[in-house]
Amino acid sequence: MRTDEAAADAAAPRHGRGHPAWLRTPADANSLLTALWPANVRRAPDGELEVAGVPVQRLARRHGTPVFVVDEDDFRSRARAFRDAFAGGTVFYAGKAFLCVAVARWVVEEGLSLDVCSGGELAVAERAGVPPQRIAFHGNNKSVPELARALELGVGRIVVDSSAEITRLAALARDRGVVAPVLLRVTAGVEAHTHTHIATAHEDQKFGFSITAGDALAAARVVAADPALRLLGLHSHIGSQIFDTAGFELAARRVLGLHAQIAVDTGHICSELGLGGGFGIAYTTRDDPQAPAHLAAELGAAVSSECRSLGIDVPQLSVEPGRAIAGPSTCTLYEVGTVKRVPLGGGATRTYVGVDGGMSDNIRAALYAADYSCTLASRRSQAAPVLARVVGKHCESGDVVVRDEYLPGDVTAGDLLAVPGTGAYCRSLASNYNHVPRPGVVAVRAGRVRLLVRPETEDDLLRLDVE
Image (tube, rainbow, N blue to C red; front, side, top):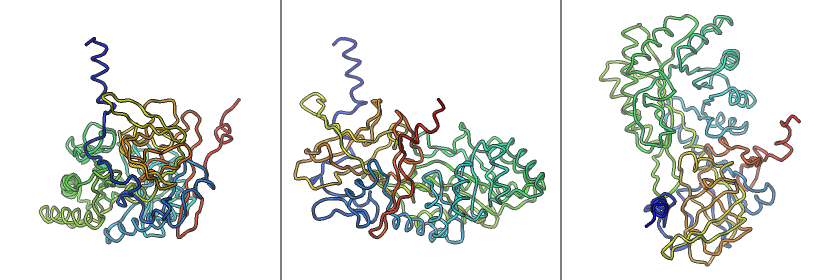
């Protein structure tokens, strides 16, 4: 074999011949795996998908495609499940997953608080009327105007991330004659079992003060000694899309050890412990997320046990689910434009299904090698299932929406596909790559449709272009 042929053959497995081991060929390509979909998604007798009683073709005609479709009752019920599971603590909805004015109001109505990490997210919270005391402000490089705005609004917690920010925040608080409420973000040195880009508690990364290096204790001393700052507690976040509690429990033990050390060293008792979020959801059949009640029981038991060992009072616990609330509540509708059968060698083929969106509305597949599922949404098919790859319209070979899925063999232009689990980080990370307008977001509840975020137009794209 020639060298270039050998290299090409060696590269083939990266692109994939055949389906991954976890993907099973369905007996019926119309089957709907309910664990992956919002609670109120059903197939009508003719096979068309309905969201809370509204047929997807009606949604597509009215709002165009791609479009993010939120099952509002599903979102709210997931928020309530976390609220009830962590009763006695505080649940902050992580706005970075997906945030708009309506969602911020839902969060408050369901008894949750809100976590923001930029001036823009804070502006959404302000517009929505979120009580400032129920807002936590994260971020590793908050600007002076952002910190000043947080103080002026009376934000309930500012999660500080660096020594420079401590100095900056204290000066701003003194200038305004207020005391800034502080959570200290610490790095617990825990390697979360997730993609490297969304693991956030190992030592070599940008967030927080290292416990191991002593930076966290030094920062706590500074905050506790400054009358312009009030040290409420410690905060840790180990990563995202995590399915077991072992990493959280280890982080809790290490952070509580620091908690006890601060009390001995400074005499200051921290009243709060934030364990962050990152709870995983089911994107495909291989994912097995835990219910909020189970998470709360496991984390609560670990914290209580460690506090007993250390001889300290149990601090108030807070968590920050975002994906676990928003992710499963939403699906994205696309219209099929092209279908290609591509030979893979050895008689095998893959069907490439091109849709009218892609990496501009869901970058996660390209950024994190994330897997998604999908289904033919506009009709029932009698065709046998074929291995398909759903790809976008962008000028990139990595523009993949669903890497591996079985779709009916007669999928064709004009069909609608629906991709579940797109409520978190899809619209939030959306871009205008190739000057493609970002999709709108609609909420469906009990047969009624409401536009939450309007789709962009070409006029929107050109409005910022200074000739």
